[in-house]
Structures are given as structure tokens and as C-alpha cells.
Length: 358
Ligand code: F6P
Image 1 (cartoon, helix red, strand yellow):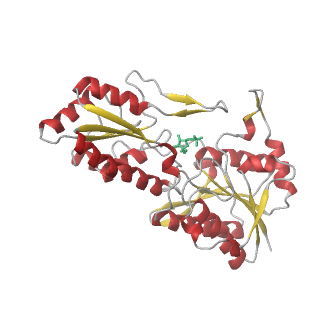
Image 2: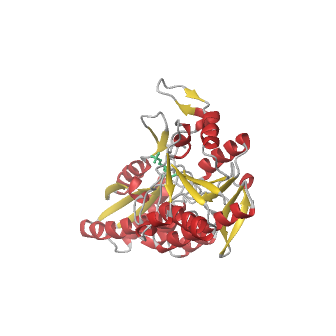
């Protein structure tokens, strides 16, 4: 009878609770194991004693299939190898995390994280001899080797709904609406929501653009008799001179944010159109999970338990060609799944007359 731990690490997203539920149901009911939830990811393991919660099937009514957030809590700023200290310095606290893990007497750890978190967890696992199975999650969908990560489909849905709601007000006021969406260094959310939500222009970090070309598209839309236009821009898109627009937060961490305003001002200047800018922000992380994320969460969670049962560690469960596969964690560390500028989504967008400003 095994005793496993589970944690969520990095930015929250839809599907995490459904995944924790799936792990708990399959581990407890299917295998007869015990499951301990670790709170606040690696930060919870730094505490003495570690912050934990016992997970049992009875805890999980069906609302957890849809509930956003993570019942375990998460951290997006506390890399234990360079942990931010109150005096502004950084400290390697990895041994504290490993000691916390060991104190729990666990047989294995299931870590649900994005590429950054999974890389950190793998480094900890190597250093501390922790049997680790990874599950990919991130609204950015930039984890390598998996077609989809948990939370991405729901974030795209939120961005589509935003475009759906911007369209009538844009049409009512003859305006150009700019919607800035998240995605870190990848343009997946902007591209997929842009196609599905009817954007006229999609700007993503993978395709260089010029404001002049964006303005030309807006003018063409108006010349063709439509009084409004929709532009969706991924947060990591840079200014035309290549500057990334970043915000520095209290912890000293930097995050993308603000390129929508830059694009909006450029379009206003170059077209004379009236422009408004919406920054969608963390709204993209808090929606109830759409069916695809509920399913993926269930499939990933159950399969991760099977991997532990079979002793297949240092791997991540992934989704490829309509099935689960297991990928060595080395194959996702320091890699990133970006939009393919020659891929079918970009091609389709162009075929539909959408401009990438190039
Ligand atoms: O990685 C998920 C994500 O939401 C990115 O899209 C965004 O850039 C970042 O996290 C925001 O981070 P935080 O939650 O720390 O503000």
C-alpha cells in the first residue's frame, strides 16, 4: 500500500481540482493507497512541519470537476533554488524542500506544473532522489511534448467570450478594440481565440509585425464597409523596436503586460480610428473548466497514478495523437512549445483573411 504526495505549482488554471480529484479517486479507490496533498507547492514543503492536507475520495463532490483554482494552493514566484528573501536577496532553499518531502514518508510525488515548475521539480527530484511523475498544466500551452496542457482550453474560451462581448460594443461605437491576452512567450491563446472569436488582426510573439501593416488592415476593413475591427495581441509581443513591456511586482518578479496599450496608441495614430484597449489578465485563469479540461484532468490524473504504480518516474504524462503518452522530463526541460508560424492554425487564419501584421 503506497502513500503518495501531490502538489500544484506555478500559476493556477482550470482543471487543477479535477486533476487532484482524479489522482485521489484512482489512487484511493483503484489502488487502495493513501494520498497527501501538499499545500502551496514547494513553499509548503519548506515549512516545518510541511503544510499538507489528507485527500480522500469523500472530499471530492462533483463540483471539483468544474471548480477553478487549486484547493491545494500554489506559488508562481518562489523558485526554491533562488528563493526571494525579505531583504531582496535570493537563497537556495532546495535542501529544505527535500527535507520537508522526506519528513512526510512518501513513496512518490505527483507534481502538476507548467514547464518552469516541472523543471524545478525535476531538479529537486534529481537532487533528493524523489520518485516524481509530472502532469502538464498552463493556460499558455507552452509545455513541450504535449498537444494540450490543463487549463489552456478554458483560457481560450474566456478570451473568445471577451471578443464576443467586445464585438457588439465595437460595432455600436465604430471602434477598434484591442484585446491583450496572456500566454507568456507563446501566442497560442491569442491565435486560437483570435480565429474562434473573429479577430481581424492577431499579433503573436512568433510572427514579427509592423504597426503600419496592422493599420493597413484596419483601414482595409473600414474601406470594405465594416465600421469596427477587433485586434487580439499576446502579452509577449514586443514594441516595434524589440522592447518587451514588463511590469515589476512586489516580489521583484517581472511579468509581461502593457503591449495592448502600445498597439492601441499606434493604431489610433496611424488610422485616426477610435480605439479602446482591454487587458484580460488573470480572468483567463479563473473560469470553470470547459469539458476538454475536465477530461484531460481526469485522464492525466488517473494515468499519473498508473505511472507511479508501475514505477515509471522522471516522466510526464502527455497528450499526443488522441492518447496519453509518457515523456521523459528531460525532454520538456528548457524546451518550449511555441506557435508554428508555418502551422495549420496560422495558415487557416490567413486563409480567413486575418492579418498577423506582417
Ligand atoms: O503562466 C501562466 C501565466 O498566467 C502567464 O500567462 C502570465 O504571464 C503569468 O502566468 C502571470 O503570472 P502571475 O500569476 O505571477 O501574475
